[in-house]
Image (cartoon, rainbow, N blue to C red):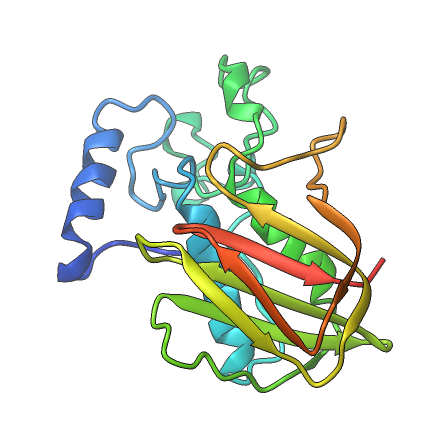
Length: 220
């Protein structure tokens, strides 16, 4: 699946579409003809891994996000800086071309997408999962070269107590969490785990906060 991303044209997304339109009014870098003005927002970092999970669980062999860098593309390939396709994880030419260095800052959805890309690599064996009766919780799981990974996202408004029933325990696991105001990174800005060296039992219970993401793996 290519050019994966969200637009808000359906009736149920009317509130998001109104906010999208509000942000494009007078915006100097895009007329909004082919953009998503909400890529700056925390919640997009939940929607994109959820989409990735659904694609994997639906039997696709891969997914590519739209897109990496705002500076890559403009509407109609015009090259006009006032109508770029603003969808990226950053704009690498924010200062040099757009006179706004803040556009070069890494946007929140990079955090979760980088983790999904790193720990669900090409060649992974996607495992069948059962979400049970928690409609706001989505998950995906895989094995790769004898290692395991599980990713979960809670898009609901309430914390959820999660019990994972696994085919095997996961020794020496790392746990990453993406929570608003709590997205730990190293000095290079890359996600770092909140727990390491953890053994995830075959029956494992944890809490997944409202509007948050978690990834558990023993991959390097």
